[in-house]
Every structure is written in C-alpha cells, then in structure tokens.
Length: 495
Ligand SMILES: *Cc1c(COP(=O)(O)O)cnc(C)c1O
Image (tube, rainbow, N blue to C red; front, side, top):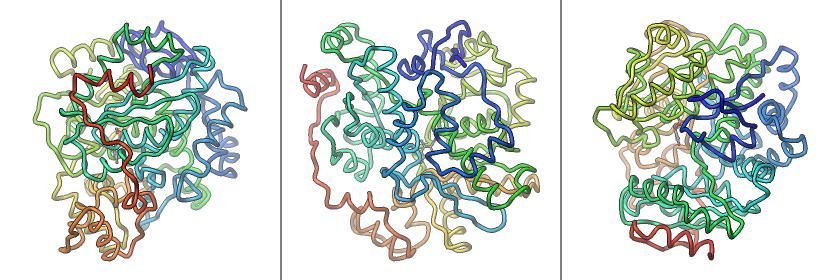
C-alpha cells in the first residue's frame, strides 16, 4: 500500500511520509491507494481481542512501513492507562436499536482523544524513519477542544515540543483553564490578543517562513502539524468503528450482519469519513447519517449536490461543529469520483475561488445512496437532551444530541429501524451550562458549581479530568500581541 494525493495521484509516499508531511505539497490530502478488505475470519479474530489488540490489527494494514514492534509501542502508549474506562470506546444501549458509542472517556472528555493520544507516537516514529529523528515541534491554533486534546496527547512524549495558541477571549473559561493548567515538560501555551482566525493565520505564517524553518533545522528540529487532515488522525478513528462492529457482533450475533447504520455529528467530516472507510473494509454499514447543527452546509450538499459556503455562520451550543469548510470532505470526493484527482483539484479550486462547487449527477447519486444528511438547531438540541434523559435516564452532550435528533428524523422519514450506532463525541460535562439548562431550571453560580449541580440533578458522575481542574494550578498566564507569536515560539524552544 502507498499513500497518494487526492489532487495528484502521481504523488506517492509511505505511511511515515504521509504522517510526517501532514499535507501533500500541492495541497492535496494523502489517502491509501488500496484498502484492506477484512473477511469473516478477520472479524472473528478481532472479536476475541481487546481494544489495543484490535487497534494493532487494523493499523498494521495502514502503517505499511512500521514494524510490529513500532505499532505495539505506539498503540500501547496511546491507549493503556489514559482512558477512564477499560474500553476506550464503550457502547451504551438505549432501547432496541440505538447503540451510543461513547468516544469521550479519554483525558479531555472528547472524541479527539482517540486520535490525538496516538498521533504523537505515530509522528515521532515516522520522523525517525523519514527525517533522521529530528525533534518534532507542533504548533496548534485552537478555538478550544483540539488544543487541549493535542496538549494531552503530546505531553511528555519524547522528542517533541508542542505550542498551542488560543484567542484570549475566544474560548470558554473551562477550556482556558484546561489548557492553562496543562502539565508536562514539553508543553507551551500562549493566549493571544485577537480572534481564532488571527491565531490560525499567525501559525500558518510561522509554518511557511523559511527563515524560521532554517533556524529550527540548525537546532535539529522541524515543524509538524496535528490538525485533522493528517492521516495519522484518521487511521485511529477507523479502529473504533471496527471495534464497535465487533462488540455488536458479539452481543447480537448474525442479526448485525444484515447491516447497521452509523450516525455521526459532523464538522470537518473526519469522523464520518472514518466510518465510511470502515464500511469499505467490510464492516456491514448500511447508511451513514451525517448530522449537522444550524451550520448545515453538509446537509444541503448531500441533498442537492451543491456545496456552498457563502452563507451566514452561526455560533451554536455545539461549537465543535460550527464549520463551513469541511476539509476532510475532499477525501470523500476522491472516493465518490472514482479517484479522479483532476476533478477533485477542480472542485477544491472552485471552492477556494468562489466558495462553492457542484458535483456531477453520478456523484450525487452515489452520495445519496451512501449518506443521509440532516440538521437541527439549538432549541431542538436542548429538547433532545431532555427527551433522552426523561425517557432513558441517559445524559448526552450537545453534539451527541444533534446526532440523536437527526437519527430520529431519519427513522421517521424512512421507517428504517435496523440497529444503529450513534457516535457520542463529548462528555455532557464538557458543555455543562447548556446540558444543565436542558434538564433543569437550576443554575450554578460558577463553572464548577454548574458541574456540581448537573451531577446532583442527574445523578451522574463528574469525569475525573473535569473534577481535577477545580484545584489545578495555572501554569501559563502569558498573553501576547498577535504579531508576537514567533517570539513566543523561539522563547519556548530556547532558540
Ligand atoms: C471535532 C468534534 C466534532 C466534529 O468532528 P469532525 O471529525 O470534525 O466531523 C464533533 N463533536 C465534537 C465534540 C468534536 O470535538
């Protein structure tokens, strides 16, 4: 297996090349040129394994230039001891058909941990192969969740440094505290005066500045990226869909082989793409249900074949899905077009020139067969949290509620009542204000008071990482001008 670029198939590299580069030189995204197909015998073996075993088995097929020992080191480093459940991705069953795949038992209580706990290991192992073991320097601009998950993932991973920039007034108090109290010898956090775009632009400028690159090279360092278009973030996400299938198979037997649906609350299209790849590998998925909040650019795209980002941007209570450009959709377009790199390059060019592109009738047809798209606003999000809590005593976060709402729409519209896996992407305690307002009239006096009230009212447990924050020591207090980000990097790296 090789990795090729979605915009130019003649560009080929290994897994280590794709992971350490992050993005292809001409702007395309790396994808495997062939996919492993798992047989009944493969799945039978997988059923008998724990999560670590399943992860190793699946990833071995994608990390073509990693040795077994390397994969073992990476997977164990990522998943042993860092999740609060012995299973990193357990399932809660609601009613007859709804299986909630809880992806938030990691150190930051959101699904990004499943990928970002592993990525640092994949990156450093890749760097050893392709760039002679230079120290990897990760820069992240974040509006909240990704920054913390990346900090936790890279915390004290040998031969890495990580620096996270966030807009000083653009993250929630809880997110700010999560980042400012981050432990680890190799982590650096800096607030900047400006908004998220300023932080993002600043990071891009540093990344592409040749003088800076040279200075890092003199010190035996190189930049790399932890953002969600890196193949090293997608591959770990395929694992939990394969694992969920095995769990269902063990519980329900052959009924599952008639097919099940997967619902994913979607922003950048990474998580749902991983579910598609699992289907491609032989997991019997019928429909992929793509759930959006009021920023429903993907719903419209699935229903019309026209992607149009020229529309209002809404700030919602499911902020991790407040996105108008879903960057991983590019990989799906590559699939749907029959790996037509020229067509993908053209669509992406149209998107950046005019904010819109339209797919052919053939692609639209394929898309409708694979996907169902739906959306839901904040009011319905709150109502769904309340309904689920009243009906099943199950408390979910705002993102998961969007997924549950769209799932319900799907069943009402189609009558399709086969078993379904719903990706639950965050702990309700991460969005305690909104979740509490959905289930009770009570209010907390502070962030942590709200968390306690939520726990009292719902009789659910506060996740340890959130409890620990209340007494955590703030280590990072620096606020810099946005023009001063490079100095922050130099001073963090001591160069
Ligand atoms: C990032 C995120 C999403 C969106 O996932 P994509 O892979 O970008 O589609 C959904 N929910 C939560 C809680 C997230 O942090």
